[in-house]
Image (cartoon, rainbow, N blue to C red; front, side, top):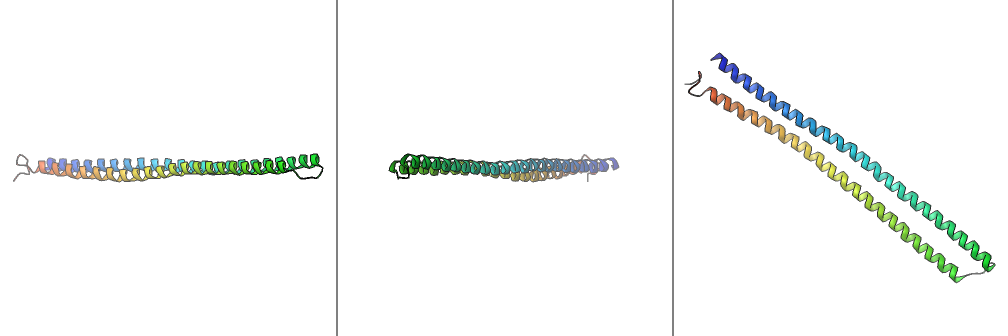
Length: 167
């Protein structure tokens, strides 16, 4: 009879130790996954920042190139016309200005697209992290519920009519 009691206690203790280990393992896995997500999100944020800097540098370089071209065109036109005005030179400059504005608009639009893609990936990562935390909690709860029901089954078996505890 004493051995049956010890067996029941050992079985219950083993079930709860096992459940505790499963819960701890699930939590550790979720913590590690969330750490990986945080690292990846930082990398994505750096990529987003670099995309912005690259777009701004490209924009500035194109503006400087356009200004240099406009100054060169103005100098050539002035030398050619000896200080006079030229409608064709003005029209060409207007065309160049419009092309530059369009080019800069496309650069900015592309930067918005890149930033949105990165922001979407960060959001997906964050949801994956939340799911990992939720799943770890559910895994732990399921392990403890299994230990409780397994313990009840063990106790029920110990008190059955065939047992030394039977009434």
